[in-house]
Length: 351
Image 1 (cartoon, rainbow, N blue to C red):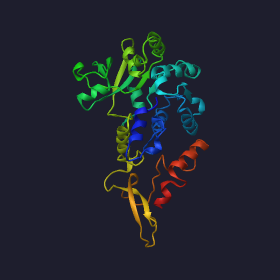
Image 2 (image 1 turned 90 degrees about the vertical axis):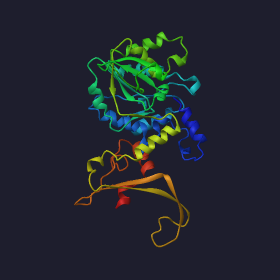
Image 3 (image 1 turned 60 degrees about the vertical axis):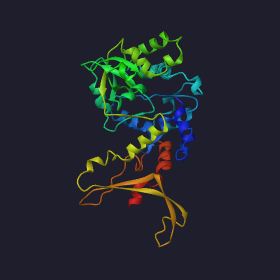
């Protein structure tokens, strides 16, 4: 997609705090200090070797940015497909883009099961891709569900009805609250068995003459599929949907308040978490430690967090994303890490 709503929100945001993200695809927005797609790439690589190869489908507008990301992550330029569209008005739609990937990468994908993930979606940090895949019964495709927070939220989501065995019996696209008793929302995250994959092309052929709105969203494909094949629902605790600036702010706030996974094992009695906002000097030098006076402002959007716990020794725990050490997958990854985190990272500052 083109992220039109988010881009418009950024342009109209009076704070101008996000202007540097104008022209950035949603899937590459920084979340927790790294591009959103990095969170999925890590999940893929930690899924017991069950996920791969990775294919990204984008458009002409964002093609180069995704290629640079793919190269920097060791995936290579060929992992990114360009659907050739240039604006939201001439887009192919998500389902057609999915079929484009299946056709273009048929020699690589072969007779595999596939995992389809929307680039603007993240799940809460307790989500385990490996656990999701293990929860799927043999032969069933799979989706995840989470409970919406209010009846009114059903009007904004795809809502699935599930029977006692976990099988999805129906998907309702943005229904009225009175139309169903279910409050189980189904985000754009689908595991399709290889036997189900040919049906994607069948769906598009059957709707070839239909307007784009009838075959664009991947939920429309799922609604069609559940009447023809078994799809199993696996509940998760929640998800982030970055459709507009407000939702992006909420996502950033959640990640800012959550201890990183490498620090959780150290959490316990005596843990202290400190947060220091960035400063911008108006007059003087804010880093002058020799008694010089300064006039500066705090910048609430940018901050550094440090977690300290009681220990018999002094130990600096490297951050897995911001203190990567001296090994990188490529020159592109080295460049990106340096641009994001500087030459030294956080350990030098702590010392």
